[in-house]
Image (spheres, rainbow, N blue to C red):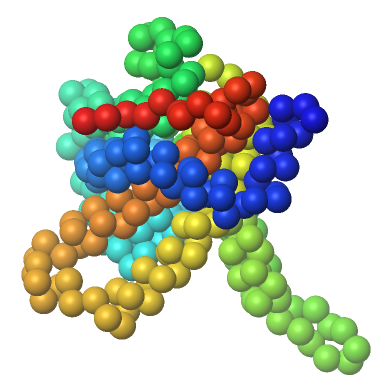
Length: 299
């Protein structure tokens, strides 16, 4: 049996053992510690990133439509907290005359921090790649800004498609003598668009962030894993914060920041776990690696 066939067979014949091994490697690599670092810098980066993106795209798309689309899809990342971020973005756009060259540079710097830390976290997960080859420092310096541009283009496309789907929801069709509204179809398509976009973004992270070239098939494996786990977790978080959570009683005015940070840490943990799944799969494809304990990060 070829090594590629062996790796595939390991996942499909013993999925439980494979994911348990990935979980153990994730724990050995201090995955939760890495996720905490990524979440902290993501909290610093998310508002500057949204400000830079919205200001750039507002020259092409109506601001109201853009903010509405952001509110819908930020809810996927930050369940129950997207309204606060969109409100801050709206206030900033109202007073955009205060933006100068220095502030733009500051926003760009802070918006890139999360990508830089994520790249470093990925280097721990993909330690077997970093040990073989390293990335030029100029590529690492420019990578966050290229990714910001990529996200901006993605947001532009999503806004245009989402606007068309929402407009379709106002229409209806006549079939079998009855008129059927398309709002349900529109909502389902919007949800599928969100899931597909989520998988695409996560897969692109796995294609770009690790050192060396990663195959699309391997990146898609991690992207689907992380996206599906996040969809389950996201619905659980919505239910928890709506029914059981007492975080507002404990933290008071700090509630929004605490909830956003907690949500980002969970999302970052699942993102890094998806990367660990890819790393374990790659080791299964390499001769002799199934008998050798994978290298891991130690504090």
